Image 1 (cartoon, rainbow, N blue to C red):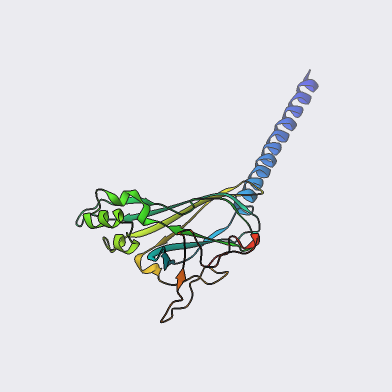
Image 2 (image 1 turned 90 degrees about the horizontal axis):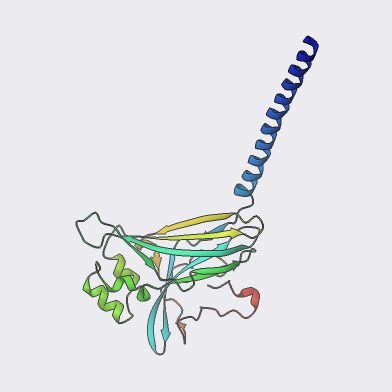
Length: 234
């Protein structure tokens, strides 16, 4: 009887040890997989550090465009990219209330951002953002919105501390990991210059910028000629 009790006790000890070791190994393997998926197999999206402001001619009428450039810096495609641009500012002087406006974009969703350094330009459309047509914004902003001539500078001038934030969400095409990317801009980050070709940087400042003509608001600076160039615009 004593021998049987000893054997059962030994067996139970071995069982408990195996259970503990199995739990540790399983937990460690799960953590390793989680870490690889969330830290290594993740998409990588970059934004331009400045906002490009250009003047185009549409039906013999000059219009201003504000543009941000994006680039897939990873080794795999990014799918289902969603973009949001928010403007934070104090509209009423002397108050602590911050007004947040979701600025309308030319393309808030990108089904695919291919890898390989291809880039995409997104236009900010303050003149189409309905929130600027009502309270708490002042009447001169309403009037500019009504005529379709509202500029980003006119809105930013309401608050010296105003900031623009872009948020992007996207999935890695292999691992399915989703990631958030964000970038902030101030009024001093808006420049009347074009982007360099194949770069997120703006061209060097010159005394005179090249004239940019357009027949429709959606036209780009250098229309692509092949499918592989569709995202690489300046």
